[in-house]
Image 1 (cartoon, chains in turn orange, brown):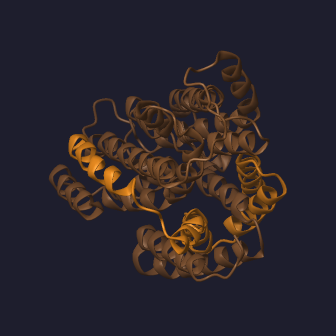
Image 2: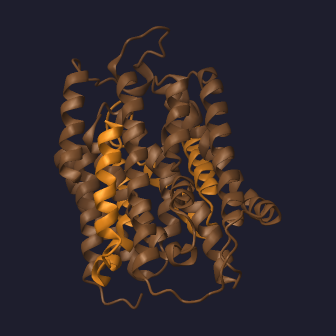
Amino acid sequence: MALITYLTRFPMLLISSRVHLPTWLLRGLKMAALGVFSSLTIPPILFHHTKLGGWSPEYLIAGAVALAVGVWRKQTIFSLGAGVLCLIVIRAM
Amino acid sequence: MQREELSCANSIVSLLIKVEVKNPPQQLSKGIGSQSPIHLLFYRVAIKLFAIKILYISILIEVGVFAVEAEAKGKESTRTTWPLFFQGAARSLPIAVSAMVDGMVFGMLAQQAGVHLWEIMLFSLLVNAGSSQFAALGFVAQGVIGWPILVSTFMLNARHLLYGITLGPSFRNQPPWKLSLMAAQLSDESYAILANYLAEGNRPSFGYFFGASFTDYAVWNVATLLGGVFGSFITDPARYGLDFAFTATFLGFLASQLLSRFYVVVAIVSGALACVGYWLGGTTAAVLVGTIAAILMGVFSREPQ
């Protein structure tokens, strides 16, 4: 399996070494990570159900906090800590 | 090529899986001797993710190296220089703190999901991409295995294309084996450090890059190990809010991508469309729809880049 992958790499490499990626594609790819991140975070937040059933805003609040902290400080560790802490606090109330 | 790859993965998936795993993470056995097919799949998925990642980055470094005109920026030495190695390592330590925590969280979450320790380590050692690993874990925990993970990783690592194409010209004179090694070590953090280094006007240096990236790599794997080993001591992840850890981490990544108002707009639109996808087809559809939407918005934007 890995061998197949390995073998399919080289033709691609040979071809692509002569190919420029078009500018419009580069522009699009810049946004790819952003798209993935928001697709992975926003739906779970908005569709969150607690174990007891029913929609709960706890993820929404904790998520907003995590995002704000992430914008304020660029390291993901702070978002992680803030979001998790916020959720603990909400659940303790 | 990718379609062959995906259908190959698909057939392997259907061969290996007889029973669909639908249990939420807390209920999956952390088994002693459990024969859940999830374990077989995990390391195969890891190998494929690794292959995809190497493929991506190698292609783009090659493209960058060959397709861009050679400016005489000064020949860099082809021998790794140790002082620069340690310089790079020192520079990456602040970022390593973040890697430490994220790695531990990953190890813990994977352990909670019932993945064996050796598989967790294999995953981190081979793939070495925080966001991709978390995404794959999210999929696995929901019982989604196989090609959706590959597709998601494909999209997620698209930015590595840009890393490769940006760094390629600086490393024109390097032998290919060094370049592929570099490809394995490339991650968001190591790319950021190297880009800053080059922007400050320093000559491109493999030593510096490997110093920075190896530190990051080592920390990430040690942290994953620690998380995996100690993860079993936390019996109720919900009490510590750890069920939100994955989402919170990714919100952090998302925040780091919001570089201008346009990026915020793209995030909102792709998030909204992803919700529609999520409602219709779960996480896989969400990622596909959201990412394609984001890419299209980028393609048709008139933003000065």
